[in-house]
Length: 337
Image (tube, rainbow, N blue to C red; front, top):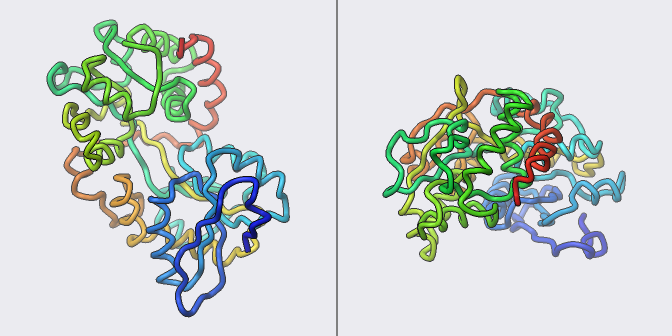
């Protein structure tokens, strides 16, 4: 089990409610927030009787797993962004998982071919646009963001943030390194201010009139609409699903991987399979306004109201492979300054 000694250097342990007929435990290291994970762990424990112990980490997951080695108590890791999943795998701290259930529930482009990581949900990287200052159809592609017509009108978060790096990686995939550098230079030239804050901070800047469009993940619209202090920000913008020229809308994932040391492997596999079930997928969809990936699972009504889009069908491992190049380009163009 996860002991106090094991967790002392980081964060306290959160334990899901345990059924009367417990069937062992499973230990999770998570970069995902407690408010999202707890409904899932509670549902899993209720269905299986398996207790779930979660260590919520803010950073250092790979380093921690490497330091713990074969003695690690962790069975599973939860995280977001393909580059973070790839980093865990590349560090050699995961193991391949084969499962007919996972294969049936997770599309091929959303899991590692060798089974080291499995996607759970997707989110689209969209454009939030001012309802008052941006006409319908005025921006339709990611390439449009570099058009001089948007000079002084774009807000975004740091160029080195994983979400920005993932999008830049997609630009490299579709257009090549030189074109991606030119695109980054064009977007930088159009910024209304230096990159700063999170995705919601960009929408607030649109609401206040500081800029007209911003990049953000879809689920932040739902989060803002639920927050009385941020509802006005959300209501000042509309969602646009840009695409790449001759391709689809950029998406990223949340996912799970089994650790190499996994002391409770059977229970860990049960939890992985549960997380891709329709029941768990819809909990995800309702709790965080994400898009479920399992067949037969639907996004909640609010998310559906934002409209349909066609996801880019690039294999996410191809994007992860471009991460270092994307980061290099962001630094070369001095995007954040």
